[in-house]
Image (tube, rainbow, N blue to C red):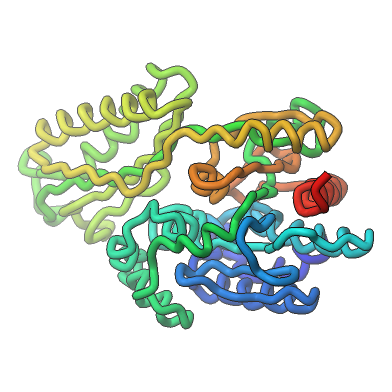
Amino acid sequence: MTLLDDIAGVGTDPARGGYSRHGFDTAELELREWFSAEATRRGLDVTGDRNGNLWAWWGEPGDGAVVTGSHLDSVPGGGAFDGPLGVTSALEAVDLLRSRGFRPAKPFAVVVFAEEEGGRFGVPCLGSRLLTGALDPDRARRLTDPAGTTLADAARAAGIDPAGFGADPAALARIGVFVELHVEQGRGLVDLAAPVGVADSILAHGRWRFSLSGQGNHAGTTLMADRVDPMLPAARLVLDANRLVSDVEGARATVGRIVPTPGGTNVIASTVDVWLDVRADDDERTRAVVDAITAAAADTARGSGCGLTVTEESYSTAVTFDAALRDRLAAGLGGVPVLPTGAGHDAGVLAAHVPTAMLFVRNPTGISHAPAEHAEPGDCAAGAVALADVLADLAGPAS
């Protein structure tokens, strides 16, 4: 908790509450400097890769390494634990292992991935997607934040050459196994009365932007019958998403962001952008929900005289973590619970390329992506010990 306390004042959001720390903004850059200093203080060698990810090596870098870590950015108004707990626990695990006299027999690194939440540029897991080749680098360079700053310009201002963005086979080859610790984003461990668990799978999930176009006009002089107001089909889209998702068991649909243009109180919007997040157990169910919502939105737009375009901004297929690694972790930690999650992670992106596992730390509120997200100090300590035990098993001498 000391390390979390050290960064508790960075990126606080007085308007939303909680924290707003986004890729390559002032707060996230301060956290990157903090991580580099803490890793260096522990004798780790810190380097950055071509995609803005930070690597802290214990000993010489090499292929087939045991790697742990997470991210330091947040959603707008997020909690204190999502991301940073995995990074601070990794550093604490290094301290614990050293206190036991342990030295890794394999290459070993702590990684901080860039822009995992997608809170600034709209695409989640930017660092891991670019590294693995899951995101086209030209598209990444063109991504913009709400202020119109491109990812390329933001990276350049942070000292990272965006021309280097893209698949990095050499960096990927250095990951022999990846273990990410994360605060649980739900009530699974609360209901199971367990402080630590192991992840089994991640729901299929994606983000879509629905852009509705109408006619901007004056709120006072335009009769109701004369309006072509895109806010009306936008409002119906929100209601239809909530209605239609109930047709698919276990699916979730969320509209968390709506942006009208020009955005004046006394102005009929000319365009409205609506962002939809959909998740389900598998790709077929996820796509079925999106297709149903898209069809309903198209009908409503036509009936309102508005135009509609739909853009898929990101998509991740359902992930099942490496079964042998999952079972090894669960058994080695004394039979801790194994449970699925509806939240996406860098571990989910890497799982298609390397053996990957996740540890969860109990969240007593069950709330995440909000200021009420929480983890008790004792559970955080249990998580750090569990991570250290797992890393010792994976990075120790062959049995």
